[in-house]
Image (cartoon, rainbow, N blue to C red; front, top):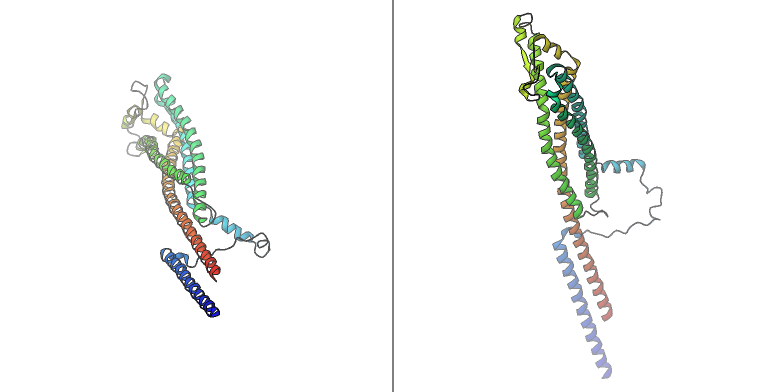
Length: 331
């Protein structure tokens, strides 16, 4: 009787252990199925061990020079590089040509339109101040272009190495947003600079077109040539009491034939073109920075999702390990 009772108790224990094993396994399968339903992309996820130094020491497994060059070229922000080159070229043309053209303009005014120094003293001070401003603009945009190019490298690395050890931060995204705002402000300011640089081009074009009228066969050799004049006082660059202020006829034609006029006219055209190129570069930078900021924002969300997924997978592994431990304890 005692043996039969012990056999019955062992049978009950075995049955209870079997039922508990089925219950634990079904619970683990339900948890795994619920996780896979919430995160479909985690079904094929596998943890890959980090290769040790011995695994990477083989000469056949090490990448060659060509692969390293391709990897380096893949991380270059070509859009930012093109915008930086365009910005440097535009600023260099505007600053260099504008500086020389302003000096030539002062020489033309002093020699032909305003012989009294006191009449154009204010204009000379303003032009000298503008030349110093040109120095500051060139220095600032040289540094700003390098910073934007470095930011392009940073953002490209952040996007390409999203699944690696690189982590974007809120500070980095805030800096990218600040660059977007600053580039927008600079773009609006350079639109004004571009419009302002077109004013001397318009003035020199009027003088040049008047000289072409004097040289034309219809007016050449007639008495009406001396009636064709150019008065720079109407542009407001010198006061109305400046002497002579107005040049007519053959004297005006001689001014158009001087090297100062020829060089200043064409340099102002190039400076205006440089200001336009800088505006285009800043618009290009604005599009790049806006796109990079959006990429960083999406990258931060993707990183948060990956962290949550890794945490869920770790919890599932813990549940499975605890279930196996409980099953082993009952068996």
